[in-house]
Length: 100
Image 1 (cartoon, rainbow, N blue to C red):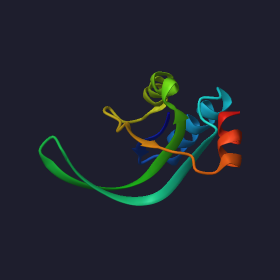
Image 2 (image 1 turned 60 degrees about the vertical axis):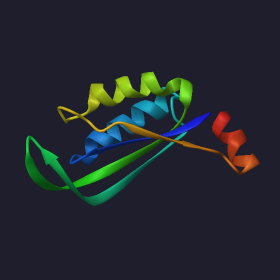
Image 3 (image 1 turned 90 degrees about the vertical axis):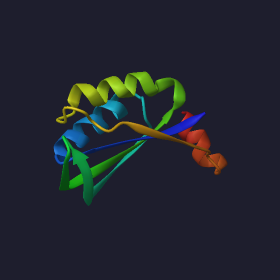
Image 4 (image 1 turned 135 degrees about the horizontal axis):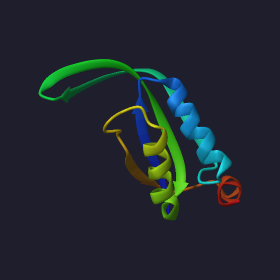
């Protein structure tokens, strides 16, 4: 089974460090950083509006605990967003590459 994990940060370098660590440890074959998104959320009862970056991490479900540890290790937020979505790989060639 495959999952995409999502986390966000106001620091591009933090997400880049997470991405490189995951790729180097072969915990994800591919990550994407989407720059300059506008986020709205409640923090400590206050409506907050920030510019952030979004990191998408493609992975195998069994690697999620290790990926979560790396995100927490490098993240600059006190309470980083770490959510996941299940996905299917449609392309046979991509699946072969993804599964290594």
